[in-house]
Length: 315
View 1 (cartoon, rainbow, N blue to C red):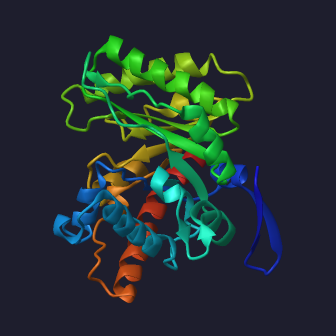
View 2 (tube, rainbow, N blue to C red; view 1 turned 120 degrees about the vertical axis):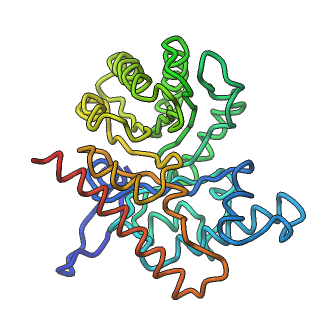
């Protein structure tokens, strides 16, 4: 894994690899990967209305400015945030003079991931599988060249349909094998809709399907799971314990930050990978001092909830 040197509290330099940071680092993964479809909403919540831009190019520039403000904020570093998921447009941009992925790792000790999916198909059998990802191999080569450590792809489960859930998990693992061949670590994200009437049943089916697929991996193939916080606490414990799992992270999925954090605390061994719950309360109108203070508070709250779950798993 790529290595960086960072200063420990006693002033000594320690060598940290990206694999170390992701597998054993304390903290959470920030999701900064709003795509073309979700960017207008993210900007609106940040206080920038659709009137402020006339084109996609202008919109992406504005969202990049918002992300730069986040990534350069004092609290945004590897002591509490172990990784960050980027959108493809962000990967090709810079923070000052440095490419985003290099900036995150070399100056922040935050491991960069890339969202690779192209959105969702229409619902069938109670789920939305991934749309095809044309040019996947070329994208993964570009990601590797850019210093990206891993990838993320999201599909969604709306109801407890065994056939649909089996299909969603099989597709995720199928794409994951291609990602692993490129030396990247896949984040597999089969989100369960939090409004789903039979969410707990979906969680049981999902856990079983994931275990089946994990058992087919070779000993040296590691993946990360990104899952909706479950109805029954610790129902993902068998996944967390599996030898092929590097980390199990939780999406906020529309839960407010206090509720997402409360649920996270009750699930030993899971850490956060929040997007909306991280950005909540941040605004373009805030002074840098106000923005940094609010972000620092959010990061601390999510970090505390992530570490509480980790601590619970050590007991």
